[in-house]
Amino acid sequence: MLEKNIDAVKGFKSAAKIAKNDTLSNFLQKKSEQRNLFAVQLSNIILKHGGNSNIQSTYKGAAHRIWMDISTAVSSNNDEAVLDACETGERASLKEYDQLLDNHPMPAEIRNLLAEQRKLIGMTLRKIKQLENK
Image (tube, rainbow, N blue to C red; front, side, top):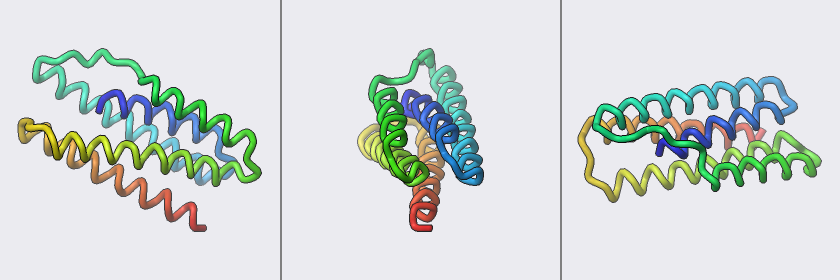
């Protein structure tokens, strides 16, 4: 999950730079900051439980950011393409959170943190869908 959130920080930051609409750009920058907070929270809990949190962004995340850059460059409606790419990323995040929460036993402290983060990602996905429908 830590890797996914590091990817999301970079993805949202990239999307914020690409977005033409200032309101959308600000929203995406705030999402980048939120996912950075998620990464810090996860890193702290990993360290607390004796793990290693020195993790870099994943190849899959880098590929998604590259796709976002390419698709927005050739798209006639950049903000729509940015929202589509963000929606794809958030759906993937939800899927990974669901798989982790559904298939792995873990201490309540970790489960509660992941459940809260998952809830906020779901809220972000709903907001992205609202923005797409405007």
